Length: 110
Image 1 (tube, rainbow, N blue to C red):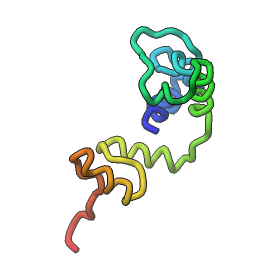
Image 2: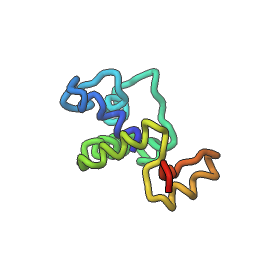
Image 3: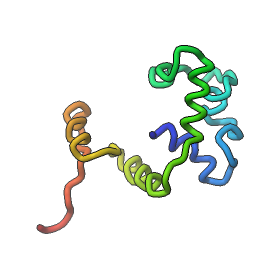
Image 4: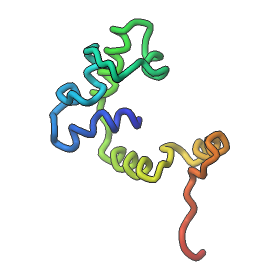
């Protein structure tokens, strides 16, 4: 989800109408197959398919799929303080793995 947010940031900022137009992003490499010596196939991307073409198609479709407006706000609110997105039970399961508190506590007096 974070990759999606980053890939679409230039679109939200009004710099381009689609990530394929933004030369500094990874969309051109991952979805269009345009070589970029600064990027490599991370395990997540490599798991999208068994061929380069399959990975490109799946990545492009994933970026092009719709996301609800409320989800953008949820992503922003989670990424800024470095929190996880997901159900509280999921976050509590991940806390011991990361050694970080991921579930916020209510502030103020009870």
